[in-house]
Amino acid sequence: MYVLWCRLFQKVMKFFMDIVPFWRKPKMITGRDSLKKLPGMLRHKGIKNVMLVTDPGIAALGLHHQLLEWIREEGIECVVYDKTTANPTIANVEEALELYRKHSCHALIAFGGGSPMDCAKGVGARVARPHKKISSMRGELKILKPIPLLIAVPTTAGTGSETTLAAVLTDEKTHEKYALNDFVLIPKYAVLDPVLTRGLPPFITATTGMDALTHAVEAYIGKSNTAQTIEDSVTAVKLIFKNLERAYREGTDMEARENMQKASFLAGAAFTRAYVGYVHAIAHSLGGEYGIPHGLANAVILPYVLEAYGSAVHMSLAELADIVKIGQDLESDQEKANAFIAEIRAMNRRMGIPDKLEGIKEDDIDMLAKRAAKEANPLYPVPRIMKKAQLKEIYYQIRA
Image (cartoon, one colour):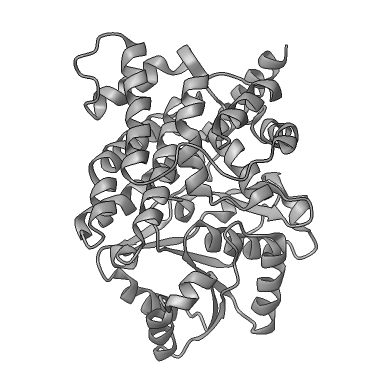
């Protein structure tokens, strides 16, 4: 009965999502040095005060300094919030909101990876709904009012947050990580400038790239696909298999960097419509409780969850294997699916990503599995419904 309830809920959600008119992708500003176009666009739109949301790592490197200079040359005031944590918290959002209001801002620039983007989206949600707490906007369509102009400038190629309707935040008191999902959170513009990713450390390139692969694969194997999400997922998977390890080995390979940004964007567009699955639910629980970076968690967890799905994903993974030319000498879907999973593990090893995750406490596993099940069921249209007991087995498998 539980599985039937989940599937019925998912069918209703898919029907609703297929008919709502609010789906859109951000307008893209693309190409090398395309960041230079952003200040003029702000001036053209009459923006006088803007807040740039970033994180301490970017601030320490000064990656945003050139953009600040260009913005101020246009006569626009720009205040910076640079305290976003790796798994942004409600406290981050409230602190940034106070700065936004103090400086009378009326636009947001999210500059960095998924964390600054989620924080900026949280600020936007609070501006739109000043009398609602973040916790009361948890889940689906709890904002429903326009947020300030939001421009996403990714400096990694993986999270896809520049194209999604989700803001994933952590309650620093309970360590629970959850999402706000609403069409109004989709950024208006995404600046995809591969030059910004050129200085990424190899390990960050690897884990964020595997994050994008997780998005594309989970969207593809799920049960809420559309023709467009299938096309976006397939294109993203092809680009990642051809370009991720190139970008990892040679950080100045701008063609590979550019292609990875495109893959991240398309994978984000796919999963924001088709949803993700248990990889993300487990990763979110670990990020909230232990602060494990999301890309790293996804990279490690992905092959374990794909194996746990069993025969439910053999056909779809075999299709992906054929697309990226893995296991071409194999005949059965099961063999091809296993070859695809094995290649994911091999990619991780070649890029120095571990097979298991440090720091997971055995005493926490029941609580973590409960949180993952609560996030995923009944919302995520996964290939196979798993309950808490089955998810607990995966935590034990990934635990170092």
